[in-house]
Length: 420
Image 1 (cartoon, rainbow, N blue to C red):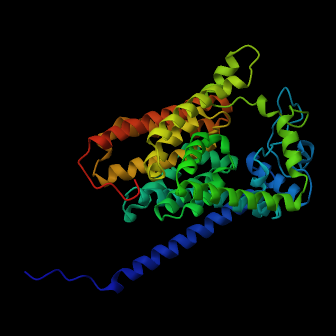
Image 2: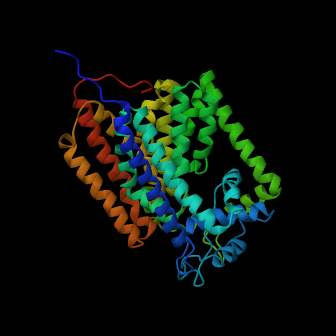
Image 3: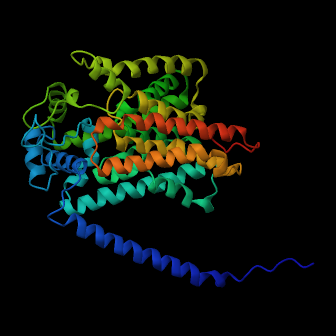
């Protein structure tokens, strides 16, 4: 029997051209709708986007980006959402509490006209999240032809919708961890450390990871080069922010160590969606140190574990499980938008299940619970639920992942993808 004849290459060209044209038209239509939305004077702007844009503009002008009164005035003038509370009847500023190196990201946004800045920030973050999902999928063995699986998981994620509505920096955090994994596989530790500088926009979320990296640095050249790359990137970013505003470090320390004011709540006034924060609010006087106890205990346990069994080569296998633990025990934050980092373990597990031919039927309960949890996050976002009420998200997501991972371990043997 003769071998089948492959169709001529030109046969698929009209279909590909039609698909590309449809993508261009959809993108153009989407951009037009997004532009109409951000330029509508009746539509409030995302509060977290406003904090980044305002802080970036102030620092680029040599002014104090941690001055709540100036941040408040700039945000009120640019369609700030209603933020009135009994403690702040006139509303309060959305503050960017990121250390000054984060202003190197905020300043390019701050110098743009605000409509353009909102488009770049919102659509750019969404594109970064989708692209990172595809990279993670392939990194953990998912076939390139099924790129739509991680994109679907990203676009169907409740935290991604919260991120898009609120305008936080979850896409940059995800890019930092994804870039580290790719650089790790390419044996480029300095580049990997530079990518991790993006994750240092919220260093409190990844305390366990940072401790592991420091242990690596004490014992291996690879670990030292990772830390060097991160230090160089953070130092360069800090230098940029300081060049525009030489007083920025003193301004940051003064704002971070002071209490709230007429124009903003203090850092300790926020009720975070973490178990530690809930325990703290149940203790008389609500001492802040109570909120840090889970992270301190987990850090000590992980430091002992990593000192005994860890090495840089293990990060691709360990990181997808360290992320959920870190988000659960975070000493601060772990806001709904921060749960975007769950895409790393979610996509990693999905890729492994796909590589072993394990269908949804084998993880039906976990997949259903995970889908319902994401829908619940979307509903809560639309209902503007209090931030602390999202405390269940990280533990439930982690439970679903553990259930799905058990199905993966029961699956038929398959080759472990490189780097895992």
